Length: 129
Image (cartoon, rainbow, N blue to C red; front, side, top):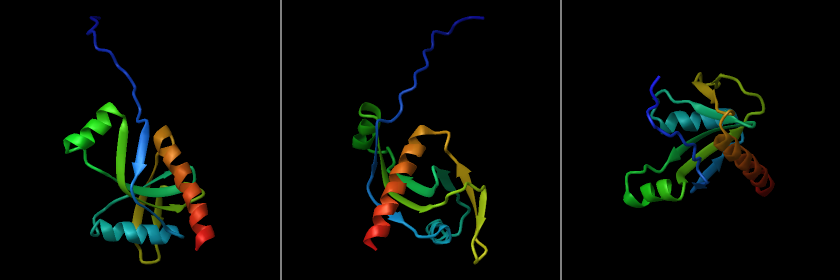
């Protein structure tokens, strides 16, 4: 077996900047919202730490965003929508018969941290409503 000399490194993001977030009081509301913003196209949600969510990253198509991504290990999410979901289930169906898959991303440390942050935000939203 010949060594190729390729080095493999793991360099996770150091920071996630969430520019806008919206808490939904129910999973059904989140599913309806997600279906509408996707224009009725199939789309799914992510799940970790008791939170179902969807996020929209800022594309790294500009020099400034690419520099933040590569040099500072910083990623920008323009919008995150979420609802609490205590137990993971692979699919949900709303009363309007919207069927939405949910992907368990709890094996990913970044998604777990984001989910915990969102859960903390949801408790603040509930207090202020």
